[in-house]
View 1 (tube, one colour):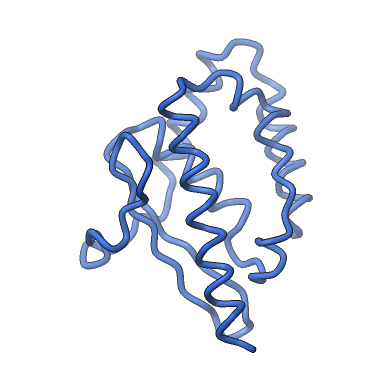
View 2 (cartoon, one colour):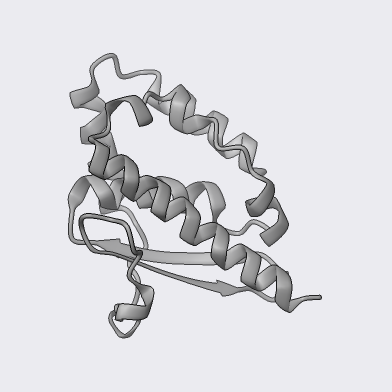
Length: 141
């Protein structure tokens, strides 16, 4: 699936919830289904700077050129947010990640319903994923 197809799927899933409390519960469910980063990857180098809670993110490039991500967080809402981002970006090409317009964040109301510190954390997570994409993209050249 393309990044936009995945975003559209997420928008559709969140549209069934009218209340933000229900959306938060769904975020928590998504976080619980996250493929957790290996314990040996929970290093200071893999902590995303700018998040109030601790979020670890690791990336690797697959043989087909796409990137795979694994993550974890010590906060349940943040874990759900990184799970959403990984769902959008996992198994995508670095250039597609770099070029992606992340419209689903506004469409599901996430950016409007996050505290300022969580919004900063969301921006930091996106920035780190794009840094990985830039680094892997530079390696292939």
